[in-house]
Amino acid sequence: LYDIPGRTGVAIGDEILDRLATHDQVLAVKDATGDVPSGFSRMRRTGLAFYSGDDALNLAWLTHGAVGVVSVVGHVRAGAYREMVEAIGAGDLRRAQDLSIELDAVCNAIMGAGQGAVYAKAALGVLGAIPHRSVRSQLGEADAEEHRLGRGAGAGDPRRRALAQGREAHAPTVRRHGEGVGVSMAEQCHLADGVHRGAVRARRGKGWSRRG
Image (cartoon, rainbow, N blue to C red):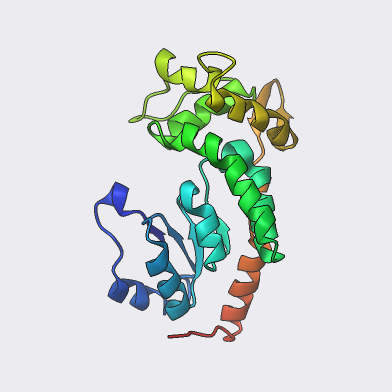
């Protein structure tokens, strides 16, 4: 399930979520409501696996029991988010906090100025990970002024430095496809995959516990 009332105009209510959670094919929720306390209660009550759908709250969701993230900024810094998920799983909160602080500037640069997908593609273009920054309609690609986000107004622009720092971290997830350059989604898809698969196996084996 994907709960994003800011885009749909309608939130998934508790009664509906509880009913959907009883369906064998409903296993997880991507929560982009911005309401971590409510999500914490819901994941405990329903037994569903929760994923953060809000990059600014990824650390908060993970420390409250989310099993992973579905991230826009992760297209640029997938490895760092994977490390954050693994750090939480290992009980290394300090490392997860450090990563969250490290990612704050690039998160603000991509998510704080407009439509995230537009800015993520602009950033990937700056990093040389994709050949162009076109997006599907009804969205429009970043214009010259918006693209300044990636290029920076000058060497002192902290947003530009954040993206530049992402170049090295992002490099391992970039691969060649023929003559073009594509971005591997393996890092993105691997985030907490083992945790989620374990949850799916437990539920299919009727070992899923619901706590209320």
